[in-house]
Image (cartoon, rainbow, N blue to C red; front, top):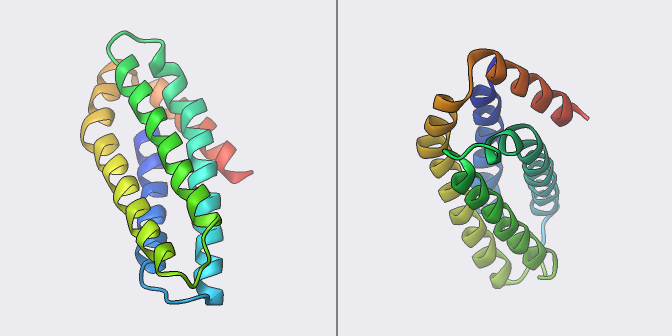
Length: 142
């Protein structure tokens, strides 16, 4: 497995969790549970991705700007999560904010998969791609 496959696998989990979450209503146990799962997944993924994907790429001239942009988007996603945590689950504002988070994350994932992965792929050799996947998956398993 290479780093791109590992990241895409987690991206799919995130897409599914967000899809389910925006279909929940009110202050329900399922909304709370899915939100906790999404929050954990996004946080753990961002940390592991920054350590085992962006860190090596930020050192390269060809990928530094893309890496910095992606890390900045992680911080924007964190801000949406913080807003959701401060909003009552039953509030219509919660769902509106959740949909805004979903839009931001979907934009981020598409940008990574369609643009950043291609640039990174040109700058990493096969061994590096496999090693990064191993490191990323090990961190995600904790």
